[in-house]
Length: 278
Image 1: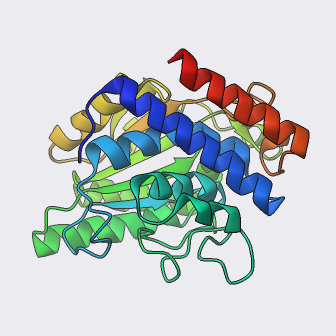
Image 2: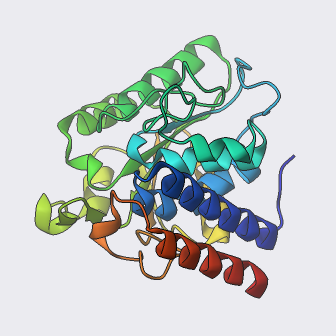
Image 3: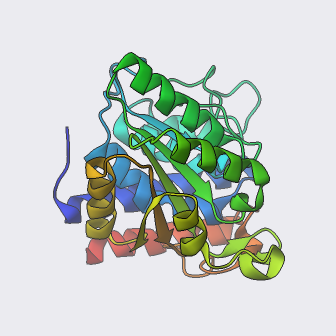
């Protein structure tokens, strides 16, 4: 069921963030910062935009989502659980041996995962292949690929962008989680990645810049991508690493560590408070 009420989507996104914190805390490891930053984007995709059915996870005509920044898997798992692909209790098994919820998404272990990811820079290449296949089959599937802004320092990303533009893949929508932080610090200082908009324009993409935490802007941007013909679209979503948990926000140190018991309780308390305020 498509949810159009923005306030309802905001509440779902808070639940998704709570699931992220629960998963990473239970595992005592993971990547909460970049998972929290893309929670609103995933919420809009799964609850408002994508043609999917949790009861038919292998439907050949479904839209596809590739979380190329696979280390943020807790975000994907949390939104899948919220959507009903599996029980939310399963989030407590995140990163455990034999769990369906591995540290990086594994399409062979978990229904609802459309692509196994984790080696940064490779997800978009798979997305380009899926988009080409959908056009060849006249299936009408939309392909969404979420990249990290640190990830786009990988050269394979730009090769995939060239292929997407050359093949006029207007059924491909790339979403850049632009939180400006990677494991070693700010992206423009680590890899010199700046003038992002101009770079994507030069590769023949339709470029849309948005606030990646504003539900209306996310919905409008994805709608624009669907309506754009003859070229692929990239949505550059300006986000906050660790969004929703005050002591994690804009802190590169929360790229890849789990909260302590006290931090876990404080994070859940903050998110519950936000739910009540909304």
